[in-house]
Each structure stands twice: as structure tokens, then as C-alpha cells.
Image 1: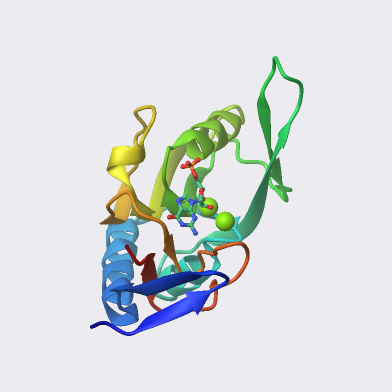
Image 2: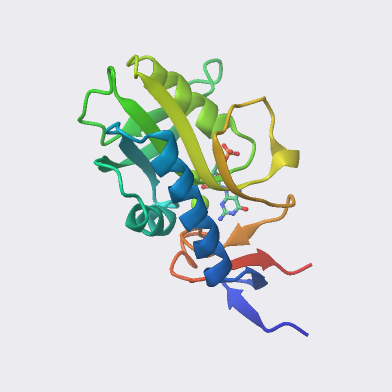
Length: 179
Ligand code: 5GP
Ligand code: MG
Ligand code: MG
């Protein structure tokens, strides 16, 4: 039996070990180094979930580049307008820039579709999305994602930056909820 850990009330087991995650992240960095050769992209890492991925990715990026950290806050506006997503912490103009969004996981895709819509309004030269994980079965609308680290089954995961009710972000491996 695999060893399990407990976070809050639930049990989790290792799904992807740190060294596998980090080998794949180095591959993604290599692809980005090739895609953006001669350019000066700006990386926008979405906090909190992407902090560990972004830190590891940037260590293998050899481009002249900027990195900045954003937060998205989602709140219920009115019954009719539904949820509003606000991007916080963007002080830079993106107009004419090569923008690379760094996300932890794309589940339904709704968060990323809204982030994309708001960033495209600034007319960047290009907009690429890099996500460490994606759950293809959970996607609600089609979305172009340039780099996906790992495709996952539709199960709850934590660790490597991802939380369960704010715990578990510090775990160095990726864990999945035990059946
Ligand atoms: P989406 O809008 O794509 O459904 O959701 C995106 C956000 O939901 C992610 O950035 C992440 O914060 C959260 N999320 C989705 N699936 C998981 C999961 O399996 N584990 C954790 N910890 N967070 C998830
Ligand atoms: Mg996220
Ligand atoms: Mg969360």
C-alpha cells in the first residue's frame, strides 16, 4: 500500500514525484527558450497556486525576461451579472509585449478564459498560456493552451503549490485524493 498523508479531514497519496515534475518543467522552459528566442517576454504568474511552478520554471529560462505575480479575486457581483473576476497587482503595460501566463492548473477553464479576455484587452504582441496541470475532461469551453505539463484525471490534487483549504501548498510532490 502507498503511504498516505492527511490534510485537514482527507487522505492523499503521491501522484507525481517532485523529480518527474521538475524534469517536465525543464522541458517546458526549453520550449519557451526556443519559442521566444530574441524576445523579451513578461511572465505573469498567478498566485498563490503557481508560486512553486513559476520558481522552478524560471530557473531554466535563459531569456531576457520580466516576471511579475498577479492575484485573481473572484466575487459575486449581482445575481444577474454573476461572478466577477478581478486581476490584482498588474502595474505594467502589456501593450505590444509578449505575455506568458503561468498557471498551476486548468480545471473548468473558466478562470483562464476570463484572465485571457482581460489581458487581451491590453493588446499584447502575443499571449501564451503555460499551465503545469490540466484536467481535459473538466474543460467547459475550448481554450488555446500553448504548454501543458501534465494532463490529469478529473480528481482533486494538492501539493507543489496547490492547496486544500489553504494547506498543502508546501508539499514537494503532487498528491491526489485517495478513493
Ligand atoms: P477553473 O476556473 O479552471 O475551473 O479553476 C482554476 C482554479 O481552481 C485553479 O487555479 C485552482 O486554484 C483550482 N483548482 C482546480 N482544480 C484543482 C485541484 O484539483 N486541486 C486544487 N488544489 N485546486 C484546483
Ligand atoms: Mg490557479
Ligand atoms: Mg485553491
